[in-house]
Amino acid sequence: MRLLSRKAACNTHGQDSSYFLGWQEFEKNPYDEVHNPKGIIQMGLAENQLSFDLLESWLAKNPHAAGFKGSDGKSIFRELALFQDYHGLPAFKKALVEFMSEIRGNKVTFDPNHLVLTAGATSANETLIFCLAEPSDAILIPTPYYPGFDRDLKWRTEVEIVPIQCTSSNDFQITETALEEAYEEAHKRNLRVKGVLVTNPSNPLGTTMTRNELNLLVDFINAKGIHLISDEIYSGTVFSSPGFLGIKEFLKDRNYHDDSEVWNRVHVVYSLSKDLGLPGFRVGAIYSTNDTVVAAATKMSSFGLVSSQTQYLLSALLGDKKFTKNYISQNQKRLKQRQRKLFLGLQKAGISFLQSNAGLFCWVDMRHLLRSNTFEAEMELWKKIVSDVKLNISPGSSCHCTEPGWFRVCFANMSEETLDIAMQRLKSFVVEYSTANGCSQRSPQSSKNSRRKSLTDWVFRLSSRDREHDER
Ligand SMILES: Cc1ncc(COP(=O)(O)O)c(C=O)c1O
Image (cartoon, rainbow, N blue to C red; front, side, top):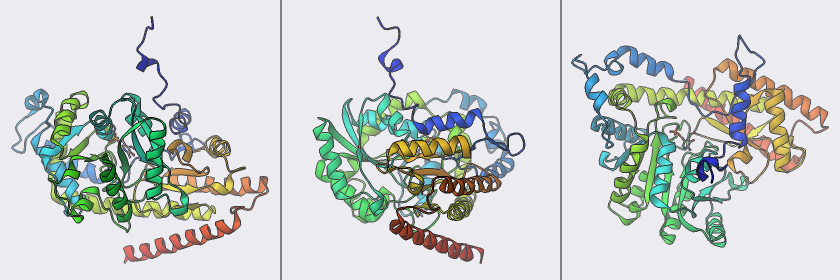
Protein backbone atom coordinates (compact mmCIF):
# COMPACT_ATOMS: atom_id res chain seq x y z
CA MET A 1 0.00 0.00 0.00
CA ARG A 2 1.21 3.51 -0.87
CA LEU A 3 1.86 5.69 2.17
CA LEU A 4 0.89 8.89 0.37
CA SER A 5 -1.77 9.84 -2.13
CA ARG A 6 -1.09 9.74 -5.87
CA LYS A 7 -1.31 13.55 -5.91
CA ALA A 8 1.21 14.04 -3.13
CA ALA A 9 3.66 11.68 -4.80
CA CYS A 10 3.24 12.80 -8.40
CA ASN A 11 5.62 15.04 -10.22
CA THR A 12 3.26 17.18 -12.30
CA HIS A 13 3.41 20.33 -10.19
CA GLY A 14 6.00 21.83 -12.54
CA GLN A 15 8.40 22.96 -9.83
CA ASP A 16 11.30 21.43 -11.73
CA SER A 17 10.75 23.87 -14.61
CA SER A 18 13.72 26.15 -15.32
CA TYR A 19 11.37 28.99 -14.36
CA PHE A 20 11.36 27.83 -10.73
CA LEU A 21 14.92 26.42 -10.81
CA GLY A 22 16.18 29.91 -11.63
CA TRP A 23 14.50 31.23 -8.50
CA GLN A 24 16.23 28.54 -6.45
CA GLU A 25 19.61 29.53 -7.90
CA PHE A 26 18.87 33.16 -7.05
CA GLU A 27 17.95 32.28 -3.46
CA LYS A 28 21.31 30.53 -2.97
CA ASN A 29 23.23 33.65 -3.95
CA PRO A 30 21.03 36.77 -4.05
CA TYR A 31 22.50 40.05 -5.21
CA ASP A 32 22.84 42.80 -2.62
CA GLU A 33 24.39 46.13 -3.46
CA VAL A 34 26.41 46.19 -0.22
CA HIS A 35 26.60 42.65 1.13
CA ASN A 36 26.75 40.58 -2.05
CA PRO A 37 27.50 42.76 -5.09
CA LYS A 38 28.56 39.70 -7.14
CA GLY A 39 25.34 37.82 -6.43
CA ILE A 40 22.58 36.85 -8.84
CA ILE A 41 20.16 39.60 -9.87
CA GLN A 42 16.57 38.39 -9.88
CA MET A 43 15.03 39.22 -13.26
CA GLY A 44 12.67 36.26 -13.29
CA LEU A 45 10.09 37.64 -10.90
CA ALA A 46 7.10 39.60 -12.24
CA GLU A 47 6.74 41.86 -9.23
CA ASN A 48 5.97 45.55 -9.21
CA GLN A 49 8.01 47.34 -6.57
CA LEU A 50 7.95 50.76 -8.24
CA SER A 51 5.00 52.29 -6.41
CA PHE A 52 5.27 51.10 -2.82
CA ASP A 53 5.88 54.66 -1.63
CA LEU A 54 2.40 55.66 -2.85
CA LEU A 55 0.79 52.83 -0.89
CA GLU A 56 2.90 53.54 2.18
CA SER A 57 2.09 57.22 2.18
CA TRP A 58 -1.64 56.40 1.92
CA LEU A 59 -1.26 54.04 4.91
CA ALA A 60 0.51 56.73 6.92
CA LYS A 61 -2.36 59.13 6.25
CA ASN A 62 -5.05 56.53 6.97
CA PRO A 63 -3.87 54.64 10.06
CA HIS A 64 -7.42 53.56 11.01
CA ALA A 65 -7.66 51.28 7.94
CA ALA A 66 -4.80 49.03 9.04
CA GLY A 67 -5.43 49.53 12.75
CA PHE A 68 -8.75 47.69 13.15
CA LYS A 69 -10.58 51.00 13.48
CA GLY A 70 -13.68 52.29 11.74
CA SER A 71 -13.81 55.80 10.28
CA ASP A 72 -15.37 56.90 13.62
CA GLY A 73 -12.23 55.70 15.42
CA LYS A 74 -14.01 52.80 17.17
CA SER A 75 -12.45 49.32 17.14
CA ILE A 76 -13.84 46.85 14.64
CA PHE A 77 -11.42 44.12 15.67
CA ARG A 78 -14.12 41.72 16.86
CA GLU A 79 -16.25 42.09 13.74
CA LEU A 80 -13.28 41.41 11.48
CA ALA A 81 -12.03 38.53 13.61
CA LEU A 82 -15.39 36.79 13.32
CA PHE A 83 -16.27 37.57 9.70
CA GLN A 84 -15.89 34.50 7.49
CA ASP A 85 -18.65 34.77 4.92
CA TYR A 86 -17.42 33.39 1.60
CA HIS A 87 -19.43 36.04 -0.25
CA GLY A 88 -16.85 38.60 0.92
CA LEU A 89 -17.24 42.04 2.49
CA PRO A 90 -19.75 43.98 0.35
CA ALA A 91 -17.74 47.21 0.72
CA PHE A 92 -14.65 45.48 -0.60
CA LYS A 93 -16.39 43.88 -3.56
CA LYS A 94 -17.88 47.22 -4.50
CA ALA A 95 -14.50 48.96 -4.26
CA LEU A 96 -12.83 46.20 -6.28
CA VAL A 97 -15.31 46.27 -9.17
CA GLU A 98 -15.09 50.06 -9.27
CA PHE A 99 -11.30 49.80 -9.47
CA MET A 100 -11.63 47.31 -12.34
CA SER A 101 -13.88 49.80 -14.18
CA GLU A 102 -11.51 52.67 -13.49
CA ILE A 103 -8.62 50.73 -15.03
CA ARG A 104 -10.81 50.39 -18.15
CA GLY A 105 -11.47 54.13 -18.29
CA ASN A 106 -15.00 53.50 -16.88
CA LYS A 107 -16.08 52.22 -20.30
CA VAL A 108 -17.73 49.22 -18.63
CA THR A 109 -19.05 48.40 -15.18
CA PHE A 110 -18.85 45.17 -13.19
CA ASP A 111 -21.66 43.97 -10.93
CA PRO A 112 -20.30 42.91 -7.50
CA ASN A 113 -22.91 40.11 -7.40
CA HIS A 114 -21.03 38.41 -10.23
CA LEU A 115 -17.72 38.54 -8.42
CA VAL A 116 -16.13 35.67 -6.48
CA LEU A 117 -13.16 36.52 -4.26
CA THR A 118 -10.22 34.12 -4.29
CA ALA A 119 -6.73 33.90 -2.82
CA GLY A 120 -5.04 35.47 -5.85
CA ALA A 121 -5.42 34.78 -9.57
CA THR A 122 -3.75 31.40 -8.96
CA SER A 123 -6.78 30.26 -7.03
CA ALA A 124 -9.22 32.04 -9.39
CA ASN A 125 -7.83 30.20 -12.43
CA GLU A 126 -7.83 26.80 -10.74
CA THR A 127 -11.34 27.31 -9.36
CA LEU A 128 -12.63 28.17 -12.82
CA ILE A 129 -11.05 25.04 -14.27
CA PHE A 130 -12.70 22.96 -11.55
CA CYS A 131 -16.01 24.59 -12.52
CA LEU A 132 -15.66 24.14 -16.29
CA ALA A 133 -13.82 20.89 -16.95
CA GLU A 134 -13.42 17.26 -15.94
CA PRO A 135 -10.10 15.44 -15.57
CA SER A 136 -8.71 14.70 -19.07
CA ASP A 137 -10.62 17.55 -20.68
CA ALA A 138 -8.48 20.12 -22.47
CA ILE A 139 -8.00 23.87 -22.20
CA LEU A 140 -6.27 25.62 -25.12
CA ILE A 141 -3.69 28.29 -24.29
CA PRO A 142 -1.67 30.47 -26.70
CA THR A 143 2.10 30.13 -26.41
CA PRO A 144 4.26 31.46 -24.94
CA TYR A 145 2.37 31.36 -21.63
CA TYR A 146 2.93 31.99 -17.90
CA PRO A 147 4.77 28.89 -16.59
CA GLY A 148 2.64 28.83 -13.42
CA PHE A 149 -0.35 27.67 -15.52
CA ASP A 150 1.07 24.14 -15.64
CA ARG A 151 0.65 24.07 -11.88
CA ASP A 152 -2.49 26.19 -11.53
CA LEU A 153 -4.61 24.65 -14.27
CA LYS A 154 -3.37 21.05 -14.48
CA TRP A 155 -1.89 19.77 -11.27
CA ARG A 156 -4.89 19.25 -9.03
CA THR A 157 -7.64 19.38 -11.66
CA GLU A 158 -5.96 16.82 -13.97
CA VAL A 159 -7.07 18.86 -16.94
CA GLU A 160 -4.71 18.98 -19.94
CA ILE A 161 -3.31 22.11 -21.56
CA VAL A 162 -3.06 22.01 -25.35
CA PRO A 163 -0.93 24.85 -26.76
CA ILE A 164 -2.12 27.25 -29.44
CA GLN A 165 1.19 27.63 -31.24
CA CYS A 166 2.05 31.29 -31.86
CA THR A 167 5.28 32.39 -33.51
CA SER A 168 7.52 35.41 -33.95
CA SER A 169 6.47 35.67 -37.63
CA ASN A 170 3.51 37.85 -36.52
CA ASP A 171 4.78 38.93 -33.08
CA PHE A 172 3.18 35.87 -31.43
CA GLN A 173 -0.38 36.90 -32.23
CA ILE A 174 -3.16 34.32 -32.27
CA THR A 175 -4.32 33.20 -35.73
CA GLU A 176 -7.36 31.28 -36.87
CA THR A 177 -5.13 28.48 -38.16
CA ALA A 178 -3.34 28.17 -34.82
CA LEU A 179 -6.67 27.96 -32.99
CA GLU A 180 -8.01 25.27 -35.33
CA GLU A 181 -4.76 23.28 -35.19
CA ALA A 182 -4.82 23.26 -31.38
CA TYR A 183 -8.43 22.07 -31.44
CA GLU A 184 -7.51 19.30 -33.89
CA GLU A 185 -4.51 18.33 -31.79
CA ALA A 186 -6.74 17.92 -28.73
CA HIS A 187 -9.09 15.70 -30.74
CA LYS A 188 -6.19 13.59 -31.97
CA ARG A 189 -5.25 13.08 -28.32
CA ASN A 190 -8.87 12.14 -27.51
CA LEU A 191 -9.30 15.19 -25.31
CA ARG A 192 -12.55 17.10 -25.16
CA VAL A 193 -11.88 20.84 -25.45
CA LYS A 194 -13.76 22.85 -22.82
CA GLY A 195 -12.29 26.28 -23.37
CA VAL A 196 -9.54 28.71 -24.25
CA LEU A 197 -7.58 30.64 -21.66
CA VAL A 198 -5.82 33.84 -22.66
CA THR A 199 -3.77 36.29 -20.64
CA ASN A 200 -4.47 39.85 -21.72
CA PRO A 201 -2.08 41.67 -21.44
CA SER A 202 0.18 38.73 -22.05
CA ASN A 203 2.66 37.27 -19.62
CA PRO A 204 5.40 36.80 -20.94
CA LEU A 205 5.03 38.98 -24.06
CA GLY A 206 4.05 42.23 -22.35
CA THR A 207 1.61 43.00 -25.18
CA THR A 208 -2.14 43.63 -25.21
CA MET A 209 -4.45 41.62 -27.46
CA THR A 210 -5.58 43.25 -30.67
CA ARG A 211 -9.21 43.64 -31.65
CA ASN A 212 -8.57 41.21 -34.49
CA GLU A 213 -7.34 38.52 -32.07
CA LEU A 214 -10.36 39.06 -29.80
CA ASN A 215 -12.65 38.78 -32.82
CA LEU A 216 -11.02 35.49 -33.82
CA LEU A 217 -11.27 34.15 -30.29
CA VAL A 218 -14.90 35.02 -29.75
CA ASP A 219 -15.87 33.61 -33.16
CA PHE A 220 -13.91 30.46 -32.30
CA ILE A 221 -15.48 29.86 -28.87
CA ASN A 222 -18.91 30.56 -30.36
CA ALA A 223 -18.39 28.12 -33.22
CA LYS A 224 -17.22 25.39 -30.86
CA GLY A 225 -19.59 26.21 -27.99
CA ILE A 226 -16.74 26.37 -25.46
CA HIS A 227 -15.63 28.74 -22.68
CA LEU A 228 -13.21 31.65 -22.68
CA ILE A 229 -11.23 32.57 -19.59
CA SER A 230 -9.61 35.98 -19.88
CA ASP A 231 -6.89 36.40 -17.26
CA GLU A 232 -6.64 40.20 -17.01
CA ILE A 233 -4.28 40.34 -14.05
CA TYR A 234 -2.14 42.96 -15.86
CA SER A 235 -5.06 45.13 -17.04
CA GLY A 236 -3.89 48.14 -14.97
CA THR A 237 -0.27 47.58 -15.98
CA VAL A 238 -0.61 48.96 -19.51
CA PHE A 239 1.52 52.06 -20.00
CA SER A 240 1.96 52.72 -23.73
CA SER A 241 -0.26 52.70 -26.74
CA PRO A 242 -2.16 50.79 -27.95
CA GLY A 243 -4.23 50.78 -24.78
CA PHE A 244 -5.93 47.85 -23.12
CA LEU A 245 -9.03 46.26 -24.63
CA GLY A 246 -10.48 43.79 -22.14
CA ILE A 247 -13.02 41.14 -23.03
CA LYS A 248 -15.88 43.04 -21.38
CA GLU A 249 -15.27 46.21 -23.40
CA PHE A 250 -14.77 44.14 -26.53
CA LEU A 251 -18.05 42.23 -26.12
CA LYS A 252 -19.86 45.47 -25.38
CA ASP A 253 -18.47 46.93 -28.63
CA ARG A 254 -19.73 43.83 -30.45
CA ASN A 255 -23.17 44.39 -28.93
CA TYR A 256 -23.12 41.31 -26.76
CA HIS A 257 -24.97 42.49 -23.66
CA ASP A 258 -24.47 41.01 -20.21
CA ASP A 259 -27.52 38.77 -20.63
CA SER A 260 -26.47 37.35 -24.01
CA GLU A 261 -25.62 33.65 -24.28
CA VAL A 262 -21.91 34.20 -24.90
CA TRP A 263 -21.57 35.70 -21.42
CA ASN A 264 -22.48 32.27 -20.01
CA ARG A 265 -19.16 31.10 -21.39
CA VAL A 266 -16.88 34.09 -20.78
CA HIS A 267 -15.13 34.52 -17.42
CA VAL A 268 -12.66 37.18 -16.32
CA VAL A 269 -9.87 36.62 -13.81
CA TYR A 270 -8.35 39.50 -11.87
CA SER A 271 -5.98 40.04 -8.94
CA LEU A 272 -4.26 42.87 -7.10
CA SER A 273 -0.90 41.10 -7.21
CA LYS A 274 0.41 43.08 -10.20
CA ASP A 275 -1.55 46.31 -10.60
CA LEU A 276 -1.22 47.19 -6.91
CA GLY A 277 1.96 45.17 -6.36
CA LEU A 278 0.42 43.14 -3.52
CA PRO A 279 1.04 39.44 -4.29
CA GLY A 280 1.51 38.72 -0.59
CA PHE A 281 -2.01 39.89 0.23
CA ARG A 282 -3.47 37.10 -1.92
CA VAL A 283 -6.39 39.00 -3.42
CA GLY A 284 -7.93 37.71 -6.61
CA ALA A 285 -11.33 37.43 -8.21
CA ILE A 286 -13.44 35.65 -10.79
CA TYR A 287 -15.98 37.73 -12.68
CA SER A 288 -18.67 35.72 -14.41
CA THR A 289 -22.30 36.31 -15.32
CA ASN A 290 -22.95 32.57 -15.37
CA ASP A 291 -24.89 32.14 -12.11
CA THR A 292 -24.07 28.45 -11.79
CA VAL A 293 -20.36 29.15 -12.15
CA VAL A 294 -20.57 31.98 -9.60
CA ALA A 295 -22.46 29.76 -7.12
CA ALA A 296 -20.05 26.84 -7.51
CA ALA A 297 -16.94 29.04 -7.43
CA THR A 298 -18.23 30.82 -4.30
CA LYS A 299 -18.59 27.46 -2.53
CA MET A 300 -15.13 26.44 -3.70
CA SER A 301 -13.67 29.74 -2.50
CA SER A 302 -13.93 28.38 1.07
CA PHE A 303 -10.59 26.73 0.31
CA GLY A 304 -8.86 30.02 -0.45
CA LEU A 305 -10.60 33.00 1.11
CA VAL A 306 -9.18 36.51 1.36
CA SER A 307 -8.84 37.43 5.06
CA SER A 308 -11.40 39.93 6.34
CA GLN A 309 -8.59 42.15 7.63
CA THR A 310 -7.14 42.44 4.11
CA GLN A 311 -10.58 43.06 2.61
CA TYR A 312 -11.24 45.80 5.14
CA LEU A 313 -7.93 47.57 4.52
CA LEU A 314 -8.27 47.39 0.75
CA SER A 315 -11.88 48.54 0.72
CA ALA A 316 -10.69 51.77 2.35
CA LEU A 317 -7.72 52.08 -0.02
CA LEU A 318 -9.61 51.34 -3.23
CA GLY A 319 -12.58 53.39 -2.02
CA ASP A 320 -10.35 56.47 -1.97
CA LYS A 321 -10.87 57.61 -5.57
CA LYS A 322 -8.36 60.43 -5.35
CA PHE A 323 -5.75 57.87 -4.35
CA THR A 324 -6.64 55.31 -7.05
CA LYS A 325 -6.63 57.91 -9.82
CA ASN A 326 -3.22 59.19 -8.83
CA TYR A 327 -1.84 55.69 -8.22
CA ILE A 328 -2.91 54.36 -11.61
CA SER A 329 -1.36 57.22 -13.55
CA GLN A 330 1.85 57.47 -11.47
CA ASN A 331 2.39 53.74 -11.55
CA GLN A 332 1.97 53.64 -15.33
CA LYS A 333 4.41 56.50 -15.78
CA ARG A 334 7.03 54.78 -13.63
CA LEU A 335 6.63 51.45 -15.41
CA LYS A 336 6.98 53.12 -18.77
CA GLN A 337 10.21 54.84 -17.71
CA ARG A 338 11.56 51.61 -16.33
CA GLN A 339 10.73 49.67 -19.47
CA ARG A 340 12.49 52.34 -21.50
CA LYS A 341 15.60 51.91 -19.37
CA LEU A 342 15.57 48.18 -20.03
CA PHE A 343 15.06 48.69 -23.76
CA LEU A 344 17.98 51.11 -23.84
CA GLY A 345 20.23 48.68 -21.94
CA LEU A 346 19.31 45.83 -24.27
CA GLN A 347 19.89 47.97 -27.30
CA LYS A 348 23.36 48.91 -26.05
CA ALA A 349 24.09 45.20 -25.66
CA GLY A 350 22.93 44.59 -29.25
CA ILE A 351 19.93 42.57 -28.14
CA SER A 352 16.51 42.86 -29.77
CA PHE A 353 13.14 42.51 -28.11
CA LEU A 354 9.47 42.43 -28.89
CA GLN A 355 7.92 45.85 -28.80
CA SER A 356 5.58 45.84 -25.83
CA ASN A 357 3.20 48.19 -24.06
CA ALA A 358 2.33 46.40 -20.81
CA GLY A 359 3.41 44.06 -18.04
CA LEU A 360 6.39 43.91 -15.75
CA PHE A 361 8.73 42.21 -18.26
CA CYS A 362 10.03 42.26 -21.75
CA TRP A 363 10.25 39.40 -24.29
CA VAL A 364 13.87 39.35 -25.36
CA ASP A 365 15.33 37.81 -28.49
CA MET A 366 18.72 36.14 -27.93
CA ARG A 367 18.50 33.77 -30.86
CA HIS A 368 21.73 35.17 -32.25
CA LEU A 369 23.58 33.98 -29.13
CA LEU A 370 22.54 30.34 -29.51
CA ARG A 371 25.11 27.81 -30.68
CA SER A 372 22.37 26.04 -32.63
CA ASN A 373 18.69 26.58 -33.18
CA THR A 374 17.67 24.12 -30.46
CA PHE A 375 16.22 24.12 -26.96
CA GLU A 376 19.40 22.41 -25.73
CA ALA A 377 21.33 25.47 -26.91
CA GLU A 378 18.78 27.70 -25.19
CA MET A 379 19.33 25.82 -21.92
CA GLU A 380 23.09 26.08 -22.36
CA LEU A 381 22.83 29.83 -22.85
CA TRP A 382 20.41 30.21 -19.93
CA LYS A 383 22.72 28.29 -17.58
CA LYS A 384 25.60 30.55 -18.59
CA ILE A 385 23.51 33.65 -17.97
CA VAL A 386 22.46 32.44 -14.52
CA SER A 387 25.79 31.04 -13.38
CA ASP A 388 28.35 33.31 -15.10
CA VAL A 389 26.52 36.58 -15.78
CA LYS A 390 24.53 36.11 -12.59
CA LEU A 391 21.18 37.20 -13.95
CA ASN A 392 18.13 35.05 -13.39
CA ILE A 393 15.96 35.44 -16.47
CA SER A 394 13.34 32.95 -17.68
CA PRO A 395 13.99 30.86 -20.79
CA GLY A 396 11.25 30.83 -23.40
CA SER A 397 11.03 27.04 -23.18
CA SER A 398 9.69 27.40 -19.62
CA CYS A 399 6.86 29.44 -21.18
CA HIS A 400 6.35 26.74 -23.86
CA CYS A 401 7.63 29.02 -26.61
CA THR A 402 8.01 27.05 -29.85
CA GLU A 403 11.15 28.91 -30.96
CA PRO A 404 14.43 28.56 -29.04
CA GLY A 405 16.27 31.72 -28.01
CA TRP A 406 13.59 33.91 -26.42
CA PHE A 407 13.78 34.95 -22.76
CA ARG A 408 11.48 36.82 -20.38
CA VAL A 409 13.28 39.61 -18.52
CA CYS A 410 11.54 41.39 -15.61
CA PHE A 411 12.26 45.04 -14.88
CA ALA A 412 10.03 46.28 -12.04
CA ASN A 413 11.22 44.21 -9.06
CA MET A 414 14.52 46.03 -8.51
CA SER A 415 16.02 49.50 -8.16
CA GLU A 416 17.18 51.52 -11.16
CA GLU A 417 20.78 51.07 -10.01
CA THR A 418 20.39 47.29 -9.95
CA LEU A 419 18.90 47.35 -13.44
CA ASP A 420 21.92 49.38 -14.62
CA ILE A 421 24.27 46.77 -13.20
CA ALA A 422 22.27 43.98 -14.81
CA MET A 423 22.51 45.70 -18.19
CA GLN A 424 26.26 46.26 -17.81
CA ARG A 425 26.73 42.57 -17.00
CA LEU A 426 24.66 41.58 -20.02
CA LYS A 427 26.57 43.86 -22.35
CA SER A 428 29.97 42.56 -21.21
CA PHE A 429 28.72 39.02 -21.59
CA VAL A 430 27.51 39.56 -25.14
CA VAL A 431 30.85 41.08 -26.15
CA GLU A 432 32.89 38.26 -24.55
CA TYR A 433 30.58 35.49 -25.70
CA SER A 434 30.43 36.74 -29.28
CA THR A 435 34.21 37.11 -29.44
CA ALA A 436 34.84 33.67 -27.93
CA ASN A 437 32.34 32.00 -30.25
CA GLY A 438 33.50 33.84 -33.32
CA CYS A 439 30.07 35.28 -34.00
CA SER A 440 29.35 38.90 -34.64
CA GLN A 441 27.80 40.76 -31.78
CA ARG A 442 24.72 40.90 -33.87
CA SER A 443 22.90 37.87 -35.06
CA PRO A 444 24.53 35.55 -37.61
CA GLN A 445 21.11 35.36 -39.27
CA SER A 446 22.15 38.68 -40.70
CA SER A 447 19.35 39.70 -43.00
CA LYS A 448 16.68 38.86 -40.45
CA ASN A 449 18.77 40.48 -37.80
CA SER A 450 19.33 43.71 -39.61
CA ARG A 451 15.57 43.87 -39.93
CA ARG A 452 15.36 43.26 -36.21
CA LYS A 453 18.00 45.88 -35.55
CA SER A 454 16.08 48.46 -37.45
CA LEU A 455 13.01 47.42 -35.47
CA THR A 456 14.98 47.92 -32.26
CA ASP A 457 16.15 51.31 -33.45
CA TRP A 458 12.64 52.17 -34.33
CA VAL A 459 11.36 51.07 -30.91
CA PHE A 460 14.12 53.08 -29.33
CA ARG A 461 13.35 56.18 -31.37
CA LEU A 462 9.73 55.79 -30.44
CA SER A 463 10.69 55.49 -26.77
CA SER A 464 12.82 58.63 -26.92
CA ARG A 465 9.97 60.47 -28.55
CA ASP A 466 7.64 59.30 -25.76
CA ARG A 467 10.17 60.44 -23.21
CA GLU A 468 10.41 63.90 -24.71
CA HIS A 469 6.64 64.02 -24.75
CA ASP A 470 6.39 62.94 -21.07
CA GLU A 471 9.01 65.36 -19.91
CA ARG A 472 7.28 68.28 -21.50
C1 LIG B 1 -0.89 35.58 -16.03
C2 LIG B 1 -0.86 35.31 -14.57
N1 LIG B 1 -1.92 34.74 -13.98
C3 LIG B 1 -1.90 34.47 -12.66
C4 LIG B 1 -0.81 34.76 -11.87
C5 LIG B 1 -0.87 34.45 -10.40
O1 LIG B 1 -1.15 35.63 -9.68
P1 LIG B 1 -1.52 35.71 -8.15
O2 LIG B 1 -0.31 36.18 -7.41
O3 LIG B 1 -2.62 36.72 -8.04
O4 LIG B 1 -1.97 34.37 -7.70
C6 LIG B 1 0.31 35.37 -12.44
C7 LIG B 1 1.49 35.68 -11.64
O5 LIG B 1 2.56 35.96 -12.11
C8 LIG B 1 0.28 35.66 -13.83
O6 LIG B 1 1.31 36.25 -14.44
